[in-house]
Structure formats: structure tokens, C-alpha cells
Length: 221
Image (cartoon, rainbow, N blue to C red):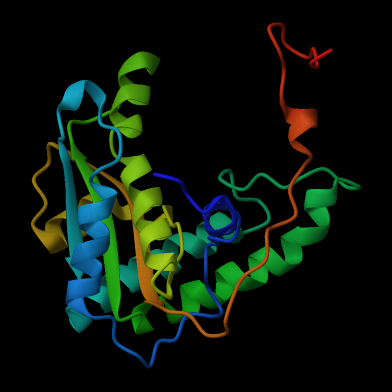
């Protein structure tokens, strides 16, 4: 089947982490979320284990509790002396974008509880202290599904934001949601219809600068 590559490329290059343009006043239909999950679970899974799980959180009290944990963690993350925060060096093109990104992230932290739904991706198994190959296999077996969900939602006018700061309180959130201890939480996606008509590709470092061919640091001749 021939694909409309212009449409596909546009979807791939304009699926953003949406924060300030989430429309918190409009509910997202459960059927739409379920359809996006169905699409997401067509993503790759190591050894065809399909150990992934998805939780949709719409209960207002649970969303508020998670948002409270998120805000507490975000304050620690965003602090200038935070061990979690890595700022680009001065003069780097990414440094110019950091104030805008931090402002957007702060807005989301303050309004997260208003999102009509969260979608949490998990997988069976734990990664603590495991070898790199095991960690890569576990994360690689369910995080692509989260990205596919974002793409499917974006195509339907629904925005989302890739967040992981809640993991600073993973145990507390697991208890809140009844998640068994053998499951690893990954990305938490607040989802809502977005305002406006479209998004633009983000400013990125040139791909050629980041790509090596055959030997580290060597460009294609």
C-alpha cells in the first residue's frame, strides 16, 4: 500500500509534548483512548513477551493525588542545585530554549490535576541493579508503545506530554493505584484535546552532527 509520506512525516515531526495547549475543559472520550491503546500495542515487544500494561486514570481524587506527588517532585527536579537537572552549556543552541521549556514544564506541573485523563505505561519486571542488556530490553519492550500512543492521539487532535518525574514517588503511586510491586512504571501521559490547529517541527541539532558511520565521529563520505 502506498503511503502519503508527506502526511506521515508531518505527524512524526510535529508530535510534541503538549503542555500549555492542552484543553483541560474538554473531556476525552474513553473510546478514543482505547483505540489509541490498541494501536500502541502493535509496537515492538522483546521476545514477543507483551508484558506491558496500561492504566488510564480518570478518577479526580487519584489524579489530584498523583499531581500533588508530581508537583513535589518537579520542585526538586527544577531547583538550580538539583542532581536531576542537566542544563546545556552556555552558548549551546539548546540553552536558548531552556527558559521556554522550563516555563512550559512549570505550567504543566501546576495544572496537571486538570487533565481529564492520565495514561500510564508499565511492564512486568523490575530493572533495578540489572545488567544493561536487561534494562534496555525491558524499557525497549514498552516505551515504544507510549510513543505510538502519542502519535495515534496526535492524529486524532489529542495532545499529550511525556513525563517521568512521578517516578520519584513510584512506590506511593503504585499503592494508590493498586499496581503490583513486580511491575515497573514508565511514562505518565496527561492527555487532553489540544487548542490550535497544528504544531511545527522543533528546533533540533542537525542530524548529520549526531550521526556516525562505521566509526565513532566519522561522517559519511
